[in-house]
Image: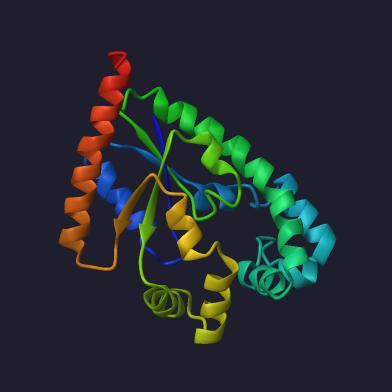
Length: 206
C-alpha cells in the first residue's frame, strides 16, 4: 500500500515521514526526486537553461540556481506552469522507480511524501492520502525562517499552493502538526496501526 503524504510548505512533512520510518515504513520524497531531475546532465535542466539562459538560472558550477528560478516562477503563473510541464512527468517516472524498489522491500506500506501530491496528479499513484496540517500563520513564520525569505515572499509561496481547505477536503487522513512533537508522534503511531491493519485486511481478502 502506498500512502501519499502532503501538506503546505513548512507543515513538517519530512519530520512526520521520519517518525513513520522509525516505525518501519520507508519513504520517498518527491522534493528529493525533483532535485534529481534537474541535476547537471539531466534533460530537464537543459530545457530550463534553454528557456531562461545560463546566466539567469545557473550557478558558476553549472548547477541550478534554485533561488533565481523560484523568483521567476512565483512572479509569473505561466512560467510556473511551463516549469511543471517540463519537470512533473520526469519526476513521476522517477518516483515510480523508487516506489517499486521500496515495495519490493517487504515493508507493510510505503510513503510518497510530496508537497504537490494533489496538484501534480501524484495522488493517482497512491492508495490513501494523509495531509499534514498546520495553521497558515505558522506556515508563513516557519517558511520565512527556514528559507531566509521575507514575510511577503513567504506569503506568496503559501498563496501559490492549493488552499488549505481544499487540501483537507481531499484527504483520507489528517495529522494536526501545530502542536508538540510528542502529540505528532502519538498521531503517527495511531496511523501506523491503522495502515498496518488495512494492509493486513487486504492481504486476507477482507
